[in-house]
Length: 598
Image (tube, rainbow, N blue to C red; front, side):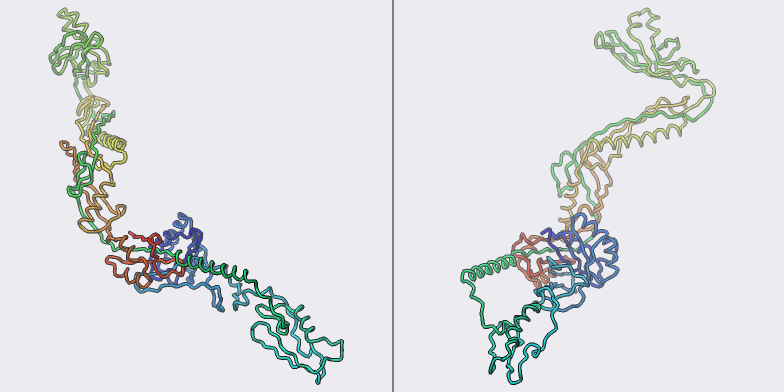
């Protein structure tokens, strides 16, 4: 129950991990840790910090009962409540007995107390001496006791012999022997005096007044219907208590399996053609991707030398005629300002597709002469040969346009592109390209693991200038392609778990493993990713929780300890029985919870 209080008795050698597991698993809203003089679990301050965070997370309050001043200081430092230990006192009917299992082995069975103290106890609180005084009326100042001769003033010859029992028992009549009544009417009778004392003196707890010992009257008998009602009520209460006794028990079982360190490799494949995790072929499902990206940047040339160089550039030819036009290398092209350039290769200009769509083709050209005069700006070009032959239709229908200025034409001292300039440009663009491809891969493969996002196939660069070209700046473009297969990490974890189970008969916790990848290659024909998966980390002895549950049901404390000690591959175990009167594991499995700590 969330509002109950539970005590966890911490033994000297209990580890903090075990204590923390028990703390998190208990449903109580308040937990009291009872510590021995020296406790391994609470000697480090970081353990108190971890416990504080855990208590905040599960919204529980924590108190400590310890005689160790260091523990109390650390607990107070982390805002935990410190309980005062009871000092020795007289026995009380309301003390709570707590049974602590002291063990010499890692198997422990302890009882958990739902309520520790029924009321706060401080050093000023006096414990009652006996049951009668627990129910005593509020204390009153009693008058000084009077002697018998202060009550009865009788002559020697007229004395009464009265015998009064001091035993605690019901009131009974006592016969008074006398020869004659006193002649003095002013003297008080024995009955009158003690009756007055009963009025003035405070009532003592659990003791009949002296007057009741002299009266012979008895209480009237209780009606039968009321006695029957009380009997039925008592029987119902007893039955309810029995039901609570036998039905409120629960057991928390915490098992720590043995740990074995593993280190192995798996030659694994992933691809579209694999539909499910396949332990036999060490294969997992995958999804193939092809990602292409291009990056471009302008760089500054740093070289200098005497050069005599012709300008170069690119012209786009447009054919508006209905026939394709072949052009040989060295074909002349004339700029709008009259500068002549020659084509470097033979080309064919495609015919127009229709009246509004001309055929196009690009051609590289070089200036007719050296010098910077040929670094002409972007503009239109014509083919002089068509005009010289008088073929006005082709002269007007086949023309060229440059979108960038001709460059590189120089004579004399000039800035040129060095080898270092060119290599640095390629390196810078390569890094940019790989980053762009990796970002694109992450965007396209959301939720999938990509292990070779930097294995980009890079095409040769294109540049407006090459090494030794005269140019103040040059623009380089780099393109690359990534072909890979992405896969779910959960599928790989399932494969690793199945592999460890089949080869080592162990369990794993994927989050505690270190997984690395090497020899990653994508096979294009089969669209399959090949990789070597290296795995290192802890594995744990397999624990059959269902069998342990079935075996523990109904077992007593000694049987529990013997059973858990006999389990192979178990380093330690704890069984927490609750409430305090429970001495065996419930037979109802719904009230037994098993936790395997890994």
